Image (tube, rainbow, N blue to C red; front, side, top):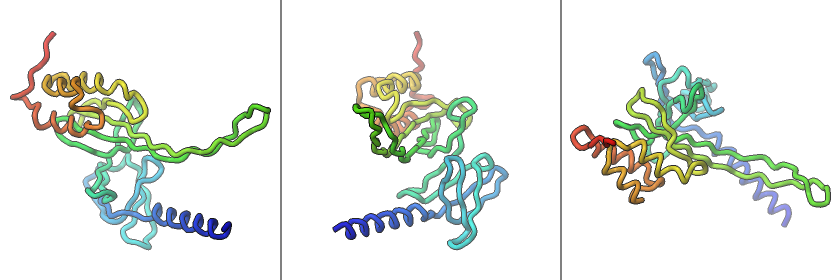
Amino acid sequence: MKKTTLLVLICCFVGSSIAIAQKDAATIYFKDGNKIQGLAKLINGNQVKFKNNKGDKPKKFHFKELEQVVINDREEPSTYVYLETKKDYFNVVRELEIGMVNLYILEQTGYSSPMFVGGTNGQMNMAHGTYYDIKNLYVRRGLNGEITHLGSNQLFSKNFKNAASTYFTDCPVLVEKIQSKEFKKKHVRDIVNFYNLQCNDQQVVILKK
């Protein structure tokens, strides 16, 4: 039984390693206007690892020199850009919606290592490690507007309704939908899409105090 269990664990580990090692078809766009196509994956939080073909020696590019990276890692290609999410702090984010208001998501996943904690009898016990999956949402008006953090799946959850209502205050009909909970945080793409399609210059009524 023990040998069987060990074999299953080894197979799972090898399978996971192979999955992680795989790269997806991608196009890398440089700030100087050039582009290259091949296989790529994101690494180290702010870099992309690239190969022209399988078996080629990989190259690494920092997002500082890139305009964007498009990777076929989902049902639809994902576009990744490098944004200053807060003053002097940059992150690689994925585009969700593009228009008058752009919506981005910062996805951070990983595993926190087990750690020793003090027990009731003065003995040290090992606490299990845990996986984490944090998703932060950001919006920006146009391509050069200020980045605004709308919320996270773990932080500031209770503030989303107020944060979204304040951000989209120039579109009363949308604010009403947010306040009435017709649109909730899980509908953030619908919120931004609604704003981009419905809250144009002819339809938006600016709130006045």
